[in-house]
Length: 451
Ligand code: MV4
Image 1: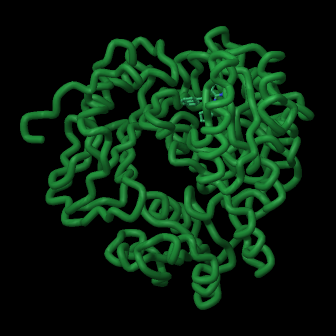
Image 2: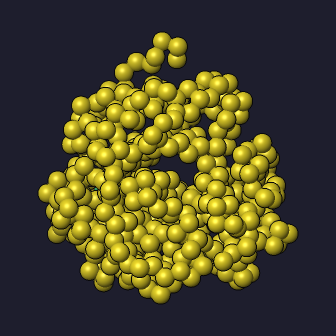
């Protein structure tokens, strides 16, 4: 087993990884920027190395500085967390070249899923359902229009380097093709310096359902049930839950098998997530694969009662997985608490937290790096806490979440807590009948009096 793991991350996930390492008897190294010198991940790790200024390009994303921290602390493995360098195949390759175990998939596996068209082609070969679309990149407008006509409008243009909805355009009729084509290409070029575009049939009113998988170094893989992430705003997830209120036992089994096929086809090693779009008829299509631990892994941990970071470290150390699939035994919901103003277009709202009281009680889990007196920096992601509630049924989990949110006190900055409180009382949310468009016509209401 590894002796010392360097955690190339910050915030709640760095803390989350340190906790598991301690329980496994593994020493930890934190890295931090000058903005994070008073952070809990720095305090709770066995060693900590400052790697640069607040701007993450010069600290958490700076590969030579992270490699230097590994060198001076003698760490033998690296955990990338999520975001930052977690899906950077070149970085994973550098680690491997230096004899450091990158806790995650191999660079080759990462590259197979990094580019959308390559991923899609791999999935077609593996027999995983994908959305009907163009065969690879579209060369020009004429080529694109012909492909769209064959597939039938509406279609969606997507950037092969894409992510977060950038370079994505829905086209409802042929007259609008040209304008959307130009927009998608320009946006893709500006965001990814890669203007490769492909097209797909547009799936209307889809749900976002993702399957958590785990694979070992011997080609075995199993799934750990699904998460429903349909509650999103501008491609930012706000709430995730498991099981999905939409999935039948039969559909769960089918999607689980497809996710395992996806993982096995690339001999995937580590924890990963296969994202699917599910249409209203219950047909599902591969969207992309996340080759990292995700923010919402905690939802799965609560319904299957496993520590996924521990499993991740164990398979990185060569553990064989048994290959049993998992069925959620409980219902879990996660609300992301961001330092944002939900009554003002979710504008980031960094600043000093003057008082902080975390909800507690049976079935309530709060993952956070925040404490009273801490200043939330404008340099990083605005997520400051995750509240995860679990209960026997979805209704009870909602009631518990509602109660927990009422107990959550964060003074000094604006947060998304009031939004989630409203959501827990929303009839459509409670009914479970919603899709990824749910928040487009959500009534956010008025801010509380003290706002
Ligand atoms: C789609 C789609 C409908 N049809 N593809 C959005 C992010 C990117 N990863 C893929 N996305 C979508 N792809 C086809 N063929 C609708 C979306 C989409 C979406 C997907 C998941 C969650 C929220 C979403 C919000 C808007 C659009």
